[in-house]
Image 1 (cartoon, rainbow, N blue to C red):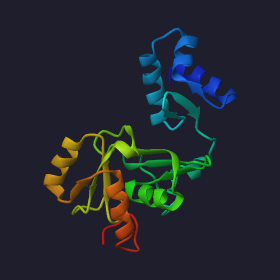
Image 2: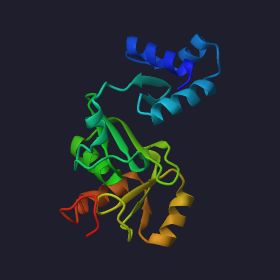
Image 3: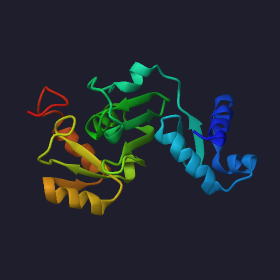
Image 4: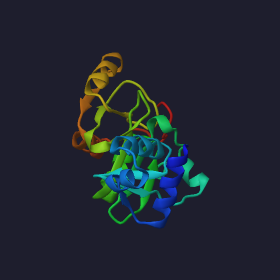
Length: 188
């Protein structure tokens, strides 16, 4: 974490939120520089970005941050999913399968973030492309993987089958196939 990123966190600790434009002016740098700083802070789980503003993540204990709030499995960042409800509750989930189940249970959310399976960067869940019904168990069953790039999802599909769908189609798939097995995180 660089010095400016530490200062950004200090400023956010004192306020509910800040705009990206205000941060750029405050530090005398471009908005793109602030976007890069915030992307690193968001990837590390310190902030949430949405629509030109940023907020600090609520404080949490380390054991909570490591366990999925749907199935209790250890969270691996490559497949993590984060949901912030409209009421401000934060849900950390092990995979898109559990993330979509949480979205279904909690309804409207303020922010919903998935992790690109191939590259590990955080993406807006509503804009992600999901590979469902594939012949591979990565985490929970049925496996659902999120991709930033539709082209990469289609390439992955060629090797492991399944269908590439959008967010709402993936939610519908989970509604119809909540859990194929009582064992989360293992093959059947």
